[in-house]
Amino acid sequence: MNYARPQAPDAPDHGAISFDAIQNTRDLGGYPAADGRLIQAGRLLRGANPGLASAADIAKLKSYQLEVVVDFRSETEKHAAESAFASSFNWIADPVMVGNLSQEALLPLLKNGSPEHSRQFMLDFYHAFPRNYQSQFSRFLRLAEQNKTMLYHCTAGKDRTGFASALLLSALGVERTGIIANYLESNRYNAGANAKVLAQIFKADLSPEIIAPLLTVEAAYIEASLAVIDEKYGGMADYLRQVLDIDVERIRRNYLV
Image (cartoon, rainbow, N blue to C red; front, side):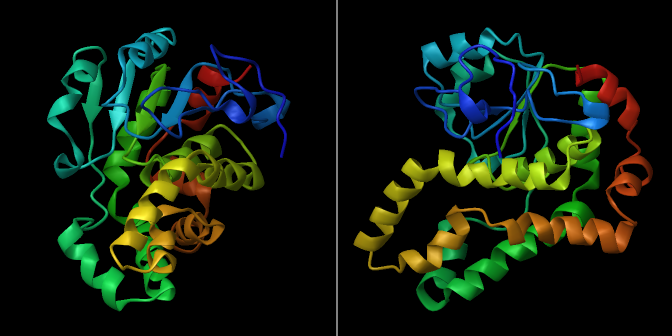
């Protein structure tokens, strides 16, 4: 799907922003949204962990005049070397702890499981997002109500960030096909990093086919979250307005042009 996308600083096709040390970072600007309008460029960025950003990366992000950076990671996912980034931005931690992703927890799955088990592992995450983390995602969307220019992220920028993006794009009136297309782009922008992980897994005598569903995204994953919203909460409009208590019209006034 091709979008007429206004250009934010250094934003090529698909809204991708190139950095030295941050992957899968994209500008939501330019997506067709409610009432034939477009999402404003340079206001809403999604990404993987920016904490190990280079000095040049930090300078580039500062050009966006970010008011807040929202971090969905748990404490165990963070690094001591992230202090330079922490001192440069208003970095807010609001963890979405979707399960135990430690090596100790995953190793039995990887050694004894199957691709189907790995895929179910991911589907269980996505079933939990709309049920168990309403407070976190409500706080996230309230920042959009406040008209913040922001970057939001997790570790790989694909799962927690992907679900947050689905909510935000829905609030802005993006069609579901566009929401899923945006979600699936993580496979493109994480491809290099994923290939390195799979090469290491192969050397460790583990099956790349078993870990691949954990590293990539599939339409079925985000559709699992959307199905919970449709079936348990009466659809996205009711979920946003009644469950998360979000003013959708205000968000649209803030970011649509």
